[in-house]
Image (cartoon, rainbow, N blue to C red; front, side, top):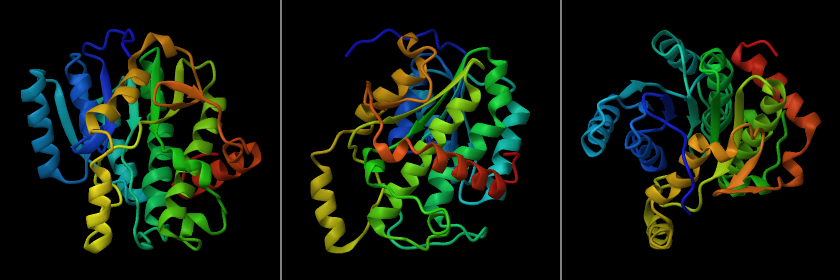
Length: 286
């Protein structure tokens, strides 16, 4: 589907998890449009290699990477501190980084790891970078989500701490958290010139949920029929750049189609309570 794109030349796009998979494909697509691309990677070697490869492929030199670990509250704030110092104006923040945990893992903040990466880190990034997004005049936040959010259930006494952990359920639960956050944040920034939307990029071959053994072999066979990262980048790049969605705020897109949210993502009270808890955990004003 060919849809018109706004001028991206020299505009700054921040992409978390930009060293691999869909994030890397998004970064390359934007670099090919002459955007100033900043990829976030917790691995300095992989981040540097990805940035160099994107520069070479796109012939765009304005591709940078920053080391950033979204696995804890402190390290996420440290990443934001660095971004605030270097990028006074941001055109779009693409919260792409995500994890699918195969076993319960608790981080240094006593939070379940995927709750931290899939929800709380985007919450911190979006809130603290908002002044830089506003300074751009018109800016967008894109949350990479998943259709599995429809199966999510959020218990604020359990989900953040992994007390209701399951392989499939926790991924869905944290994606629902991200969707609830998208809606609540949209309400709070309405009319500011900044918009936030969520997108399901399709079922794509990535390392998400990778495992070994027989299950890993079977999953690998299944993934052969899934889309490529390049195909997965199409909808996020469109949502981050297209004039067709200028001013659209707080919506969910399945690929490039605006889609009605499932009832579990329309729980305004739960969304507000999740916001309050997230702000408290992150040390931000509610």
